[in-house]
Image (cartoon, rainbow, N blue to C red; front, side, top):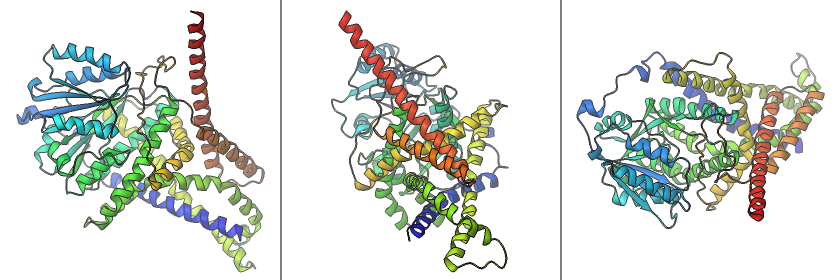
Length: 528
């Protein structure tokens, strides 16, 4: 009976994941179908200057304790190729450290040069980022609202390139592609860059071109103010206020545009524990928005294909607990397969004489091979996104392909986030309120840069030790499979084992460095 339960649960989990694989195949299909069309980078885009169209714009910069990057952000905001009297900069500062003083001196410098800057400092973080954006909207003068997080650099042509799209009344927002200032810094940043390129150049771009719902990514985009107001502003009842607002405006028949060839460079997290908190926030916020918005999507009069892509998008956090379940069941499944190995072989031969349940088990394991085809679209999409990003950015591809290898290893390593993100899904489903923990950035761009001796470095989570336990468990399963010549799961077990150990041990290493720094500061203070 236990064997039947294991096989049944494993099959159900695989079938659930296959739904998202079908989504990936569909994205790949649309890309291949439309590949002969003109590339976005080859198209002539109008600019605000050519249209003689200069509406007033408010640029919102939500900031919370970002002393290392605010100067870079504010400097880029002041260099926009747009009439100075047609935009204002809103600094929405919730900081509790010296970031506020740094901003004060920068504001004094830039206002003296004629830049219109408004400084809004809140004593609390009520509503977190959504609360800060809403507070800014109360005083915003702009017909359009651009939003940039602290780690971004705003391209000088940003407003010139995005404003013309709002000539169409149904455009609520224009989202640009994120660039990566520190893509080559480490294996961690290479993997993140690959994942984000796939998201923007396939998920966002292909969906936008085919009329499916996409999401504003929280930064690097610009909104029509009236669209935000029409749906009740930013809501703070989820951790992903950007995803929530995106779906609410699209349900009102607005459209969000995506521009793949307008790149807003940003800094990728190099702090592993900070990255885990970011993924937790995105996952929990995603499932919160799913609970809130998905029923409205399914009840709407939207076309079936739009509902399908919205369903897979909003429910995608479920992938993490499903994947974790498959990893836990990998050893029991291997044990069952070894027990019935002769049955599996005999079921392939003609004239076999097997009992009904043995025949069914043999057919079951043979049919599992079918599900391997659902893995195929992901490496294809990642490799294509790497090529396409290089083509759009005018860069030469790396001949040795190490970017693919390391990136794909780390994407496999993101399976190690399945424990962390499963907790996020559970808390989201149960309605547990958690703090909006921002992902700190350190102006770490060059190889020689480091986060050592810097503030904001996140401490280790107890979940990290569960990740080590999972790594050991998968290692044992891998060796056990090898001893018994069971090779079906070995590629996945190998990849996920590396992922769990890589992120877990780097989390511990980072924490120990932080503690050593803390202790050395205490010793120095005592001596002096």
